[in-house]
Image (cartoon, rainbow over all chains, first blue to last red; front, side):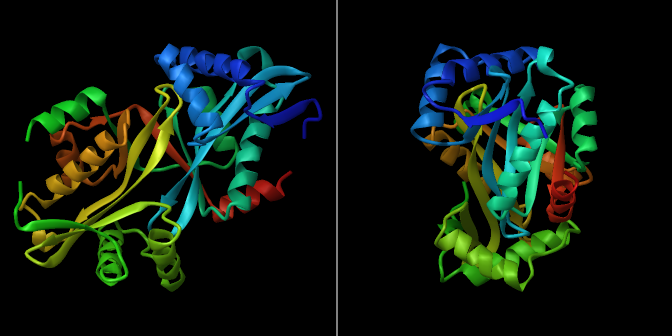
Length: 160
Length: 160
């Protein structure tokens, strides 16, 4: 419970604050932040195409954190899964229960949408995040996570 | 290249063959297969709600394998990701290049849909799958994969 926190959907009005938080998460994770083109696409995909659901956490009026989720699917359960792409709270707003409230918001959305599961990934070195998610009841699975990016995709397709 | 293989979308006509293959994958992965209710939901979600894309691989006319994918999203790239939920080839149809063709089909779909990435998970003990995916150019990431299921979701929500 956190009366000082308001969770609001991303809109034209708060998009700049939301985008700033995304770049702060990328910085925290030592990953490449979205560039100018990505910012434009992100706005379009969030507000018009609705490729994902995104919310801002406002603590005493200030943009303190955000979350992004979308629906995936489990073929064995035959039910949608709520996948958490990002949950992030700015350093200076930590230890106020904001992360827990953002996570709870996702869990409630999963319940409302009849999801059988909630899934997410955590960087293996991110001990604070791992501790946080295990405290919430998350279970680490024996799966490896694989990826091909644009360069590998093009190489694969040219090697016919 | 495999002229004996036809990849066809799941429809009312081939749903039973598709469902049989899903139960075979669950068996192979030592995971709970879909039950009767799941079968009903899977049909509805594949054919009417279109929560995911599913295709059957037919080798010389026989149902030999299947694939399921859906679109997720990368907030840092600000591009859709093609996520491969399942690629499976029945034991007796292996070593004919069918898995590679099913994977190639997914890669082409990613390209057609302007995806920045392709992602998937592999059980850590599934060495043949790991070898297969690394041969295709997949890169294992330093992420842990987390999950909450129905029981953990209900427990979390009751612990307010």
